[in-house]
Image 1 (cartoon, rainbow, N blue to C red):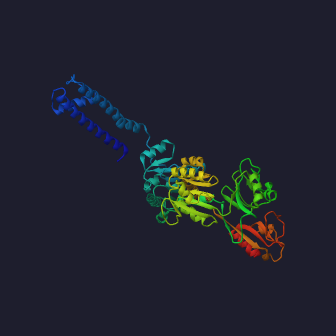
Image 2: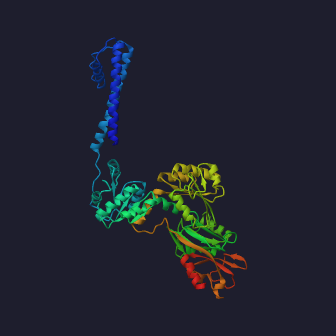
Image 3: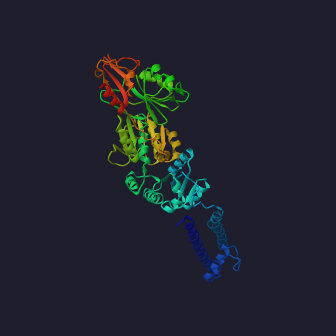
Length: 542
């Protein structure tokens, strides 16, 4: 039942009940207090006269105080019912008379995106479209919501997005894509309607339940996005580095050298300098494996690469050398040595994060409120004892993917108290809770709505997905026996795409060496590179 109709029914019911009650009380009072008995219909007439403020007063005056009090209460009740009637009947009528109905079609736009359904996720997507100066038409099934959106300045039409006719009125024939963001089953119906209205249109759907993906594709969806799953994967990129570093057997990260990640901070000595002019390798005696800028990871960076604030460096070197670089960058070092990670919340995001971390050298403990496969500790994440059982006091990273932001905020406060050095990464279900989570002590917060918006934008426009990149770096020890006595240098190895990060000679690991040094007298070199680069190195020198 619509809200306005429900209000009318409730109001009429209240009027009837109040009228019956006062009629009985008045009739009883006239017989017992005033000693003037009368028929019930006459008492009803007096009540109606009082409620409508006509008040002919044929029974007045009343002799007893009780009857006078009853009449006063009845008169006040009548005024209350009249005022309530204004709110129930007059105000909605005036509002409807003055409001402008939302459009039911938009055929004057081209190269736009048709968005089916309004939500925080589609709100973020619209912001992405506005940033790209791309038009859109929002199709909203609920009339009142469509009015509110239209009044707020959205390009919206009212209609059922499951109808091919409505999609046609949204200009699907001249659109570049259709994005369905309602319920999983409704989205599948929208896909069928979109294929009926425009068979060649690019159709993108979002799913809450990843198991719905095959059915959306069977309906004809080109791309099916699972924001929660991707968000879990995205958060894990913050655990160690922008890359997945696989450290092969025989390579020990520790006292001799470390592999770390640090970011260039605003106002630091490296801020806004080119990689070549900064001369990081020579000045600090370290080896820069790669640089991440704007979501792109560059191995063996070129001298012209700009070190803007937020640029991330993947660096190998001796601990004391890395300390000097940390001061120059003004950033905290994040070590790529094996880390102890606690994942709290084992839904789609948590399980995706766990699966991604299994590919790294991290040690992972899973905490969830329910006992299920893959969960190591069962309990409430807000309970300090449960967090201790999960190893929070010795952990280096806490990854929160809880269903409720309020629970996540409280868990963040407790975890920060138990382990001040802990790095806390959190998924925010609502955008407005992002700031609260940061204030509670989270080091990094990623909003589900923001991730969804970026996902939709990158999928619709064919951009490189900046949230799920996975440049896989191998760290391996290469024996110099394979060089056959040749004077191989670091510069020669760089030609394969790999970077020498340490030299092992007479049992000692050295990270500070010249690029033109020959490795003929060394026992082994430790190199870093992508899978294909490592293969090229082995083929050339193996």
